[in-house]
Amino acid sequence: MNIADEKRNVYLVGLMGAGKTTIAKVLARRLAYQFVDSDHEIEARTGVSLPTIFEIEGEQGFRKREAQVIADLASLSGRVVATGGGAVLRPENRERLRGSGLVIYLDVPLQTLCERTRHDKNRPLLQVSDPLLKLKELHEQRDPLYRSIADLVVSGSRISAQAVLQLLV
Ligand code: S3P
Image 1 (cartoon, rainbow, N blue to C red):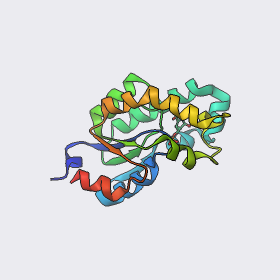
Image 2: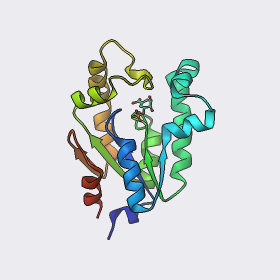
Image 3: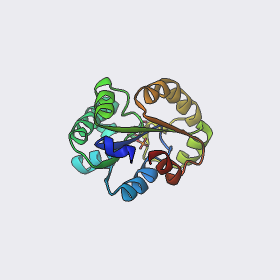
Image 4: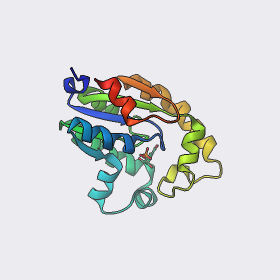
């Protein structure tokens, strides 16, 4: 039996650059679920880019929108969701993710995350002089939160969708 069958959705959580979107797309195809990226959903709803939302409404404005998207997705089923890296910050989000799906934490070394996100202008939190230090801080704060809701923790610098799938069946 497929353990994903027991829960309504599958959620990928983890820091920026962990590969949530890439892996979620493959999982969705293989499980015949619908792929959703929560950041893309926020952009689709607002009609502007994520950096623009941060610029106009600040991080808290963005978090409010993110919480709404998570609440909406948690009421659905048959989705594989790539969540934003900070989706676990609000307790109500953690409860909703945990209560409505199977949560997979992609735990990737900080150096790898830093290399992958180095040239990305779309991640406002990493537009700082020392992105590695920032990732380190985020990891310290969030790693316990990811673990607190994860059904599965997959660690490594080259996690493949295939490896995750094998853990699901
Ligand atoms: C964020 C991660 C981003 C996006 C926003 C904030 C974070 O998503 O939601 O820039 O707080 O870690 P990804 O993890 O998909 O990059």
